[in-house]
Amino acid sequence: MRSQRPFLVETITAIALILAPFVLPHLGFTPNTINRILVWGLFGLGFDILFGYTGLLSFGQSAFFGTGGMFAAYLLTEAGFGYVMAAVFLGTIVAAIVGYLIGLIALRRTGIYFAMITVAIAEVFFFVEFNPLSAFTGGENGLPGVPRPSIFLGFTTLEFNTDFQVYGFLAFWYFVGLVIALRIVRSPVGAILSAIRDNPQRAAALGHDIHSYKLTAFVVAAAYAGFAGGMLGLMQGFMPPDAFMFETSGQLVMQTAIGGAGTLFGPLVGAAVWLYLSDFFQNTLHLGATWKLVLGIVFVLLVCFLRHGIVGAVIDLYRLVAGRWAETAPGAGVVPPASVPATPPTVAMMPARRRDSDRSSGPILQATGLTKRYGGVVANSDIDFTVNHGELRGIIGPNGAGKSTFFKMLTCEVPPTSGQILFEGKDITGMGVADVCQLGLTKSYQINQLFNRLTVRENLMIAALAETRGKFKLDLFSNPRNSPELTEQVDHAMALVNLASRGDAQVSELAYGEKRRLEIGLALATSPSLLLLDEPLAGMSPAERIETVKLLKSISRGRTMIVIDHDMDALFELAERVTVLQEGRVLVEGTPDEIKGNTKVQEAYLGGVHDVLAAQ
Ligand code: ADP
Image (cartoon, rainbow, N blue to C red; front, side, top):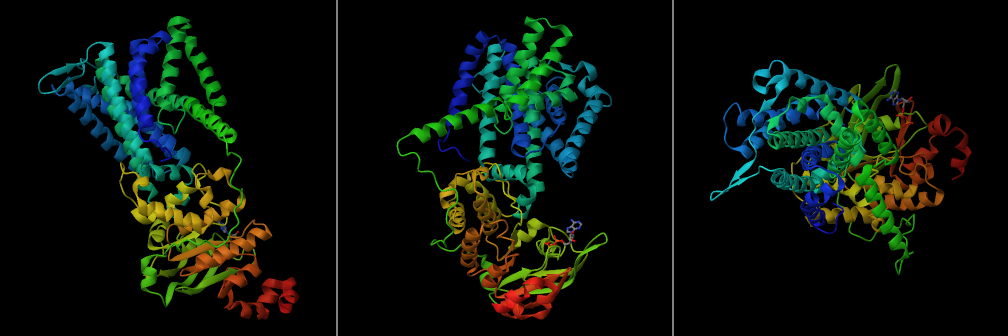
């Protein structure tokens, strides 16, 4: 997504793959080690999409590596199937199908529980391969006699018999695998996978079906594993049973950590280091059984001191040098200000959804009898609440009054204990948060929920993609940079929240006020017809508040909004009507003037500032 030079990575990789068999032997790599590195690199391409890009740490990849490899090897040996590459592709498909079925189960959980399920899966597959299926897999003997690769071209057959020829064969498929992986990570799906890694809840709240995207990454990883398994059999002329072993999964994880996750090349580089060191410790230094201990220590040191792995460190270094160079270049020093003044933008307004303009009067949202209990705590109790199209409603209430819980129920982040919510006349009670966002109802959060490792532009693109593509779309090979509508939508959102000059800045580089504006921008970029803002002014300086109120006024034109805030001056200035919540109930509702003059509000909520308000 970020590369401005198309095919640069592909070209460098192709050159490196051509040079490697001539250079690496001089560094002490044996031809067989070089070939094994490529198999691990291919295996790791899929795993990096799953782990590095999507943030899903699986220890079960050996199951798919073994399945794909064994299936292909069985076809080519026991079943007498004569088409080598067809067998490998069939093995890949079988591994992908198995990955789909396993993913359906494993992805029901997240974090450590997901990882534990994948460990169990690896063990189950190892057992099944050794016992019930040993007649097919050869049990502990594996499947010998896998033919060397050959490709029939019609007029001639290419044979790959020597290590060097096998290298050419593997390097070709590694390159194909890399090109496909690059397309995937640069596609809209790849962008959404990175968003899921950074903040899955927000990715869902912006309208993406994160479960289906995670499943996609899982299947892609399984397919790569299956293909690499097939390649292992061809390379060795033998399909070893240890492909299924848990150690295989563990080694893949470690190699990826050493090389650098989220880089695609990390697993390849990690495999090179790992295999080189294990050869060196065993065959050159003759360390006997202690080689694993030494390798373990080296692994710990590498992971501790290179947090982003070897490839990550190289990228960090490159950015540092490029940054320094840019600073010293003529014209440098014109750094964008940390906080851009939030004046109302002059660009065309980001449209609310079409359906909003279709029905420009009457209620857009109706909540009846909305109640939420957390055990003994009643956060919201029997709330009736209606907002009309085009209205700008304010909600105030002391801490603990139930305002955030109320918003969470409206956006379907939490289900109500009882009550009903109608949005545009449709009952959305109990719907998923992504579905509700797709209908045009979303919110900005009280505590920023951004995609921290992405840039401002990429953040907004994640939001805009949900509107342009819907909840789920498998456009694995399209490039979002080729969509002028999407670019326009992102540019609009960026201008609307005054971040146009900060498009390429990573979230971590933004000032607090900029982050708050991006938080609002994310919600806006989904083109909601009803926008909820949970304390948009929270944590801002008085000057930033004034500017942000201006910003909110400008974005409220032609849009329906509900705003929670503690800053009553700001809210009374913004909102046409205000609802006051107290102890989970609606205390009173009215125009700002009515609220200011309401004695119930002054006594029950405003208390000490009674006199101040009366004087206004
Ligand atoms: P406000 O946004 O007005 O400060 P909240 O909606 O955050 O109020 O909270 C209302 C009440 O519900 C508080 O008493 C709070 O402690 C309780 N509450 C909110 N969320 C939870 C939760 N997830 N589990 C238990 N109690 C909660």
